[in-house]
View 1 (cartoon, one colour):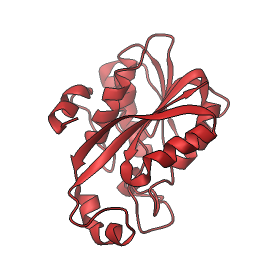
View 2 (cartoon, rainbow, N blue to C red):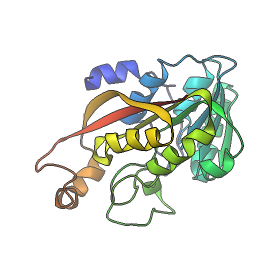
View 3 (cartoon, rainbow, N blue to C red):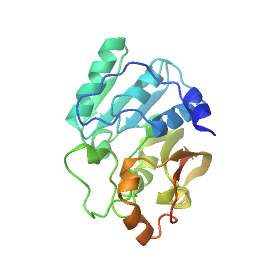
Length: 229
């Protein structure tokens, strides 16, 4: 999918506000929105969004009638998503905290996630600052693996997980982990986008880790879809 087609497919609410430090919708958000557009949403659909940011994807689903719970570890993101929901007069439940704790003992028809997935030299995940939205440990899987492990408990029978991340993190690893959790998983879409400033600033480190080829200029993104059988 080209960048222009990606932008057209991933229709998101316009004019969203974002408090300082909150991740604004970018190509990966639009890519996930396009995948979300293929799902059957309606008034009986209960959806969880992990890491809502501005609330763009949650509002996209709520506008189609889904009952959406959105979770984020950042208070700034929680306040941003609540403000955006109020401005659009859309019902949206936005919770602060870790997704596994806030969604405990609840099951959903659909779980959507655009988790942090950028490989970072630091082993520990950041606890503060905008980097929380993208840094995910040396292999970029600090949050991805937690979502894979938690997915069976979050999904109703027949429920679906939609997750976007970089191919640098290992798409097959994600599919395999979900399969080990007894979900039917596959990569349903891929696209390539130009490297952003974060990846460019880490080029030497990424090359030394074998995560990218020398002079690479494009990042491949994947959509992983998993269904609870």
